[in-house]
Image (cartoon, rainbow, N blue to C red; front, side):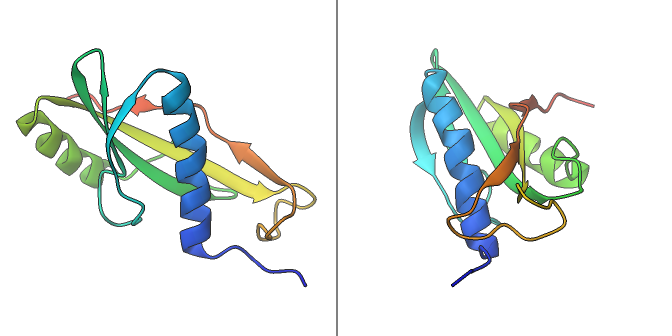
Length: 122
């Protein structure tokens, strides 16, 4: 039976995609939070520098690189207090057969992830 992935499952999938990239790039995980509304999702250490990473699943046809500027400014303020760098990781996930359809469990999907976007002072 065909089952659509829940919002939490899509978020977890996005977290796994980002987590694998962080691991491959040598980040050390200090904290992981899989709740979509508790930020940041990843607190990592790399070369003695702390990194706060906010992960979002972005449904098609939205742009995975577009982020909530107010949320990320708040995260940057929080990160600055800890001398951490702030990143946004938007992961677009869509059905491989028809992008207009939802992503289903155990069916192919398309990933649109262009890496971390560092949040700098405006």
